[in-house]
Length: 380
Image (cartoon, rainbow, N blue to C red):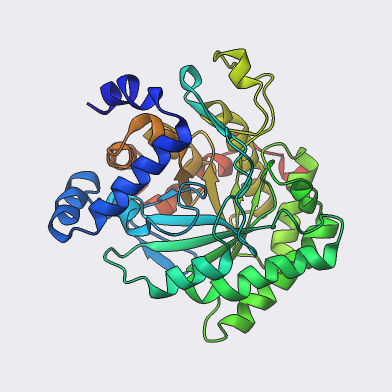
């Protein structure tokens, strides 16, 4: 039914308008007690064997909603209703901003992919913090908050950039189950330059201290999200930095600016649109980055795999490669509201057929067996 609706109705709508309509319907449904309970039973049956512990939280399973879908934290309970075990809101910036001018979101239907140049359109950290603070959860779910740089803050002013991130961290840390520093979107000028270790170290240190000041009663886990376009040696450098700073994790990966070598078959006028590419074509490179991170860190931090995850097999490969958690967004657009149900069912079947009793036992099994990633000597 969803595939018919997608082909005949949704593909005729502008992608951003379709997103607003779908998000509004999800929010509305989640406000109706009887309906949300019935739909949660349909969309999100629980598999006890998929329970995981990560970032100091116990979760029903490993699948989360990647940042970008719910920028302003308006649909957390709706996405939990659809079966997401954690929801990452944002990207949220220190100041509200409209993002880039439309059109800024494009479907590459034959490739099961999206291109976006949204530009961190959001209501700003003060508004999002207020909304999260006033939220009365109807579903127990883990809420992460992804923070980024406000566009008007000069990228060459390191002090101003740090202050911008710090303001968001101070406002949002009390309401977040974990925080993510996003330095890898291709749609904010100069943002990816912050991935260099020389600039990333003081930024992450300042954000961590801000989170501690804002909520001294608890330790808010801090992660960094990186791009798939980093050279291997830069991935290694970020991994080393994460260990050195005692970060809680790394998210691999954001969207890619690459187009060549991905086997794209969509209309060239669409594939040539500027912005970040997400979805199925990103799967292999994101998996490579994940394997490299796991080989470098040796399972000492939490890794979250994202980028091109569509099927249960995609998610299972990320888990074997070292991911404790996985996330998706583009696949939800193409697969529909029963996507998380299908993925959970498939994961449970793969776990049952494996030699592992729990997902925790499976994490990194492929990397430990020496399949992929840098050699032991390289990892050191």
